[in-house]
Image (cartoon, rainbow, N blue to C red; front, side):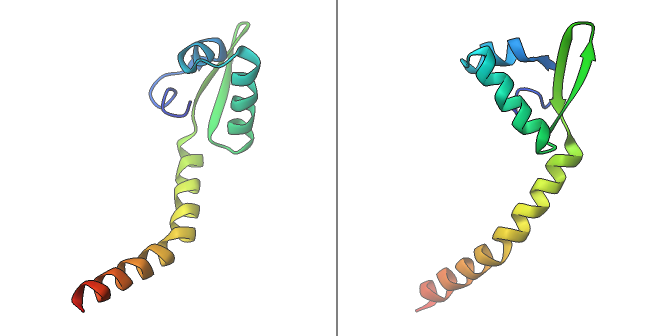
Length: 85
């Protein structure tokens, strides 16, 4: 869903159709993404349009880099040491 709303605002009905989800399932996923700060919603009449919240994606990226950065660096070092043997 995030990929679908990277460049365009889309309503939940279209997101459901594009992902093959039911409308209630798509709405539930969008609620989780909204609560996580990864999408924002804009009300346009009776429609709710969703798009990516880039500041939320940057925060997620920083969290993932902090979590995986040291582990991946250690793995790289171990692999290089093994290759040198």
